[in-house]
Image (tube, each protein chain N blue to C red):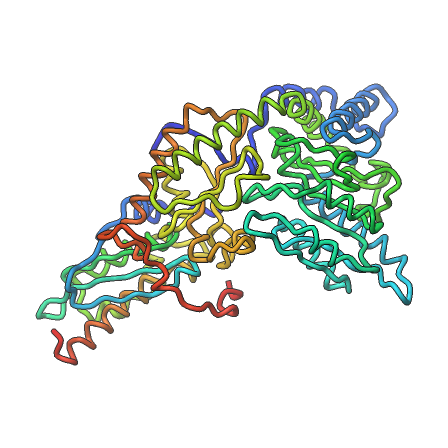
Length: 416
Length: 129
């Protein structure tokens, strides 16, 4: 066990920045008013929410009244996809069912599961494939659009392998075809420039806790003029788009986190990429049969995703935890079923190899000085686990897993 | 995620009886790398049908490593027939339980031990040992 704590799982969640926490605290028990009330406390709460709305708008170059607060990225995705679907299907005619949605195979479950849910109600969904870098082909997108297409929902960048989609071009295609374009930017906002105007985005989801803000708060950008059917009914908060008393401390925290991320964007990108590139160079040079999943081009500067043949990700994560290093894996054990990462499968990584993956996602608090310790630790753990693994031949120091692979009965997998 | 018991943690941190037995009395492999778990168990059996040495080699999660390690400790000193009767549940109980999702997918050690014993019995019947 180690006393160290090197947290490198910032794409899962991130620590609240002390400046953010300090800004939030008064709104719990001093300025605790309900933003809908008329007296001073309520007015102050309303002012705080409006300030946060401006801070979030500035991060993505939106107008203030285009921002709606939600409980997080998943709610934002649900609100947009279901809201557009329910709005548009009301315009269905005999010739045009207005029920077709285009997405990709590598979306976050908040998008994929929402699309699957809509399929149960007669919506039709096209799941675009991606290449080995995790990027869609624009010609595939053009070919998938038809009369009945109402929405394209394609993530800004991927949460596992960090691939960045050509959002601007996707948006152009969407506009030419008069189809709405939603992008899940939960991993991009505060990590790379996100500009809804320049990138032709109509709807966009962001989350507080991925950018050193609090959990339980997010936002959605809805371009002026775009109409959604409302999912959460009640007292009419957020212009009736999302009822429920505003989570004022959370919203204030998201606003502050967005402001800081915006101010420090360039500096953070440089910091993250420096650490990422050092990790890639040292790991791939030190550890035999280690690879980077996805491409180094069009990739988030804070994401690196390794693959080590012959070992399994959960045991890698647990042993690294004992050394004070926190990362993520795409192994079956992390996905609550036995299928492993759908993203790694989509970019063509064989299942037996996808289990041995390690995602490190860098944040502002990480230091380049920790890189050597991290690489040494990974190397030690990988060697230990290979020594234990029947898929690694210790005499010849090579991967022999192909000899053991068997076909998998899909029904067997679904049982778990 | 659900936490492992202290005993599971102890076994995946410090697995017992790891490695390969050269020319074992029997060996058995179960699992599939595609699903993320595969293990081989090696056994040596003496003239009284008692397991004198059990070793394992496992590719898999913490639970897969811990169950492999656990069963090697349980089986040494047992007769072949006794060891054959160790169930997946016995292993999980000996480890003070496993998270529900791991009970099926990563709890293959009893199957691997049985496969190794099957291999030993086959070799014996065919006069290989």
